[in-house]
Structure formats: structure tokens, C-alpha cells
Image 1 (cartoon, rainbow, N blue to C red):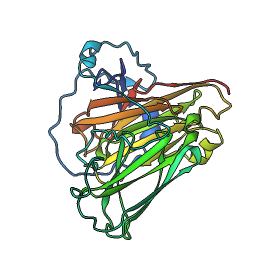
Image 2 (cartoon, helix red, strand yellow):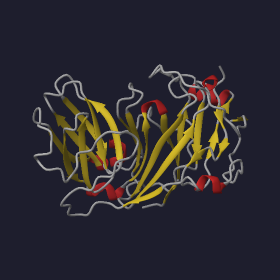
Image 3 (cartoon, rainbow, N blue to C red):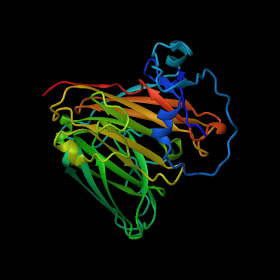
Length: 345
């Protein structure tokens, strides 16, 4: 099968004015994706949807963001743009904004002790600031072995699972200097922890989140890098938080359990804007792979952007995945996330 990338304009409902979709075929795409293994996550069948306004092109085609395949007015009419205020420096009580991608309950801040369910055991959560504006989080709940648990942090949501001892350790990218993280089990029990992360002011962060079967992934191309150059950063790159901490370049964090198709996943790209000595542009795009789990579906997702600990930009997305005869192909969402303009520090 030839691996392709689809070019569509306006196929996503989002706040970005014009979003390009690219389906690439030819040798470039084969070199890029031939080694990719696509697991059948859910095994569920779906009725194929008719995909319109698709042009098959070569990898050399440049997508014009002014393409008029779908009028901007029709995109804007379904847009939901939200600006989220960052928590105050001195935080008496966390204000929690959920991402709206699932039905996971978050404990109410005004719930009385009488209304709260009786705890099955102690749930201990600790959060400590780490390098690269990360939060080192440890969860311990011995009566919840091998249990799914959903994490909420400043609009970001993802679902993971404890080990056989009810423990889970994670590094979570902070999205606010006062990083409040809530953990919630499916029965409503949970806990929260917070950490001060003043170093967030040195970093820019991009988040894409959806269900695992959506197969959404971030690609960053730093300072003119091409695919698989040193400056191309994706989830398979060797970059780590240690690189960002010293200003070498950005890295990507994957959060959530990708083996369960309906679980929530979040992927986060971090760039050390205030620490790097380079200057130029960092181009950020999102890929969506067509799999047997998502083909023919409408998927919902969100992007979050935090620039140097400033206000968060939130975009809600609705994307039609091509029918199942396109399994193995990729959608590339151009112009969805705003490129970084990095000046020499």
C-alpha cells in the first residue's frame, strides 16, 4: 500500500483561520512512515464516511493557507475559542477547567465531607517541580492496583493506570506556575497535589489531546529542519527534558495509556524559548494516522498553547477521518498551531 498524505482545506472546525491537510504519497512518505506499526486498538467497526474536497498531491506541494475549498465563514460558525486565565500566584483554591473530551468526573470543590464517598484507602499524591518546568508526580493508592486513573491539570486531561501495587510515577509538563494536578478514579475518589514551577516562564508549550484511537501526534521542525534532521522533534526523537533544561532544543512528552482506544491521551511539545541561543522559526504541526480504530469516524480533540507562562490559548477541533480504505495514510494538520518566532537571547 502506498502511504499517502491528504490535502484538505477547512476539514477541521477550529479557531485557526485556515488549516491545511496534506496527504502525501511517493518515496518521501514511504521513507517517513514505512516503519510505522499500526495497532488495532479497539477492533470496532464503523461505517465509512464520504470524504470530500480531497486532492492527492506529491510531497513537494506547498499548501496555500488561503485555499477556498471550505469558506472561512463555515468554519468560524462552529468555532469555540476560550481563553483560560492562569492561576494566581497565591492560590487559595484551585479552579479546574476540564478538557471536555470525556465523561470522567472531577471531585467538586464545594462537596461536603458528608456528601463525599467513603474512601477505600489513603490516596497519596505528591508533586515536586523538576527540570524543564516539569512536575515529578507520584501516586500511591494500595487499594487501587491496576486501576485506570484520570489526571486533570489546567485543562489537560489524560488517563493512565496504576501498577500492581497501586503506584504510578509520572513527569507532567506544567501548564501554570502554580501547577495543580487532580487525580480521579472512576468511582469518584481522588486527590490533588500542587507544585510551584516558576521556571515555566522560560518555556513555550503546545498540547494536543484526544482519545488514544485518534492517533494525533505533534511534529516540530526547529529552525528550518527537515524530516529526520536533528531539529525534527516527534515522539520517537531522542530529545529529553535534559536537552530543554540547558537550551539545546525542544522535546515531546506523551501522557496516557495508548493501548486503550477510548482512554484520553495528551502529547506535549516543550521548547526552551528563553534558554536557547539560536534564532529563527519553529514550525509545529499535528499528524493524524488513519487506523482500523478511527477510520470513518468524526474525532474530537483540543489544542492548548502556553507561551512563557502567559495566558493559555485553547482550540476545540472536530476532524473527519477518511474511510477505512485509507488505513495507513496520514492527515497532516498545517497552520493549526502557531509557529514560534525565536529571537536570540
